[in-house]
Amino acid sequence: MKVNELLLALEAKHPGEQEYLQAVKEVLTTIEDVYNQHPEFEKNKILERLVEPDRIFTFRVTWVDDRGNIQVNIGYRVQFNNAIGPYKGGIRFHSSLNISTVKFLGFEQTFKNALTTLPMGGGKGGSDFSPRGKSSGEIMRFCQAFMLELWRNIGPDTDVPAGDLGVGAREIGYLYGMYKKLARKNTGTFTGKGLEYGGSLVRPEATGFGALYFVVEMLNTKGIDIKGKTVAISGFGNVAWGAALKASQLGAKVVTISGPDGYIYDPDGISGEKVDYMLELRSSGLDIVEPYIEQYPNSVFHRGKKPWGEKVDIALPCAIQNELNKDDAEQLIANGVLCVAEVSNMGCTTEATDLFIEHNIFYGPGKAVNAGGVATSGLEMSQNAMHIQWTAEEVDQRLQSIMKNIHDQCVKYGKTENGYINYAKGANIAGFMKVARAMIAQGVI
Ligand code: 2IT
Image 1 (cartoon, rainbow, N blue to C red):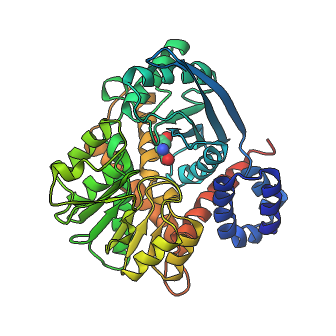
Image 2: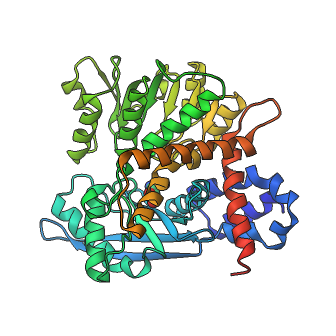
Image 3: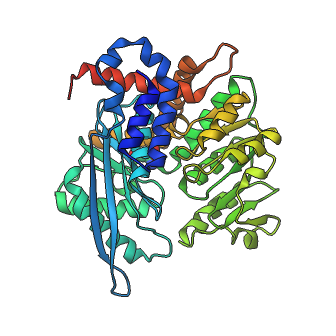
């Protein structure tokens, strides 16, 4: 198989779907050698089958805002691949969401979920609905209208959605509530649920916690301690919050967070009550971080800028895809960055990723680094199926061992001759091998 030919064909078939084509290209170019060493992959047309989602649902979502005006949005659910388990992946509410983004996220999710060691296929969904500035009533009505259309296509053994950007505990509550009303079943067909109705302890923290467990594993390969290291975090939502919480607990010093309005630099470190304050900032619904400087006057607000110009040891993009580009990467490298781990999905552009790898910098791709979120969703599904609830310690223990296992898989497939671990390559090959073998075993379907 010539990967280039397949990519050209895909570009012709799906013109303009930039994020999707980028995600596919990043995977295909790293697995090409392994693919060609296994004639059964080519014979079974695994790549041609893997790059196209099993199916896509696109639907209109009509709802009424607080002023009585009718609003129209688009809803999506991409069921990408269920070779190893039910479709599983989040729902994103963001004004920029389009089919290219949902497909890229679903594609990535397929490999990520394979890495978690749990039986979950890949799916993703969402809407171009923007929660910014919306009242709780508007959010609820939108979630209900969204679910009115989607509920028929999901279920505990079919497709299990969860949160993503713009979809947190409140939205999951509204979505799941409407699902239950329509399905008349209490099946747990959603993860990230509230603790009172089937949610798992540690799920809110899991993406950020898992990311830090992964970073610790990366640093361990060179005997480096995370204690005392400075950390730049972008974003200030659920994922950034979990990452800041665990990083500070581990003795690292988090010096930045960011929002669409700019970034905060806090020389004293963001820990303790400042991490709690992130939740308050988020709950204002305004999507800005500037109020942080009023609360903590020692900090500085840099309007319209990203935090990657700061001199730090560890950079953790926690906001959105392609938020760290080539210029940012050059700046981080010039400032002596040690480790860059994507907590957002595809947080770095391809050019940035290539630069980090070229410079032998610890670089962790999103599908490995942030897999703790969906892995803990998998643990929530297990608890729901057994009708029990594990303690926080039990869940955290499992999360830690899953992250260690993912790290081991990356090392197994990503270690290069000079000892450098290419985590992007390792994660892609490990995830691919599992899904490809499951597809072959199940025949041409
Ligand atoms: O990107 C992701 O892995 C998520 N948004 C979490 C998905 C999930 O099903 O928990």
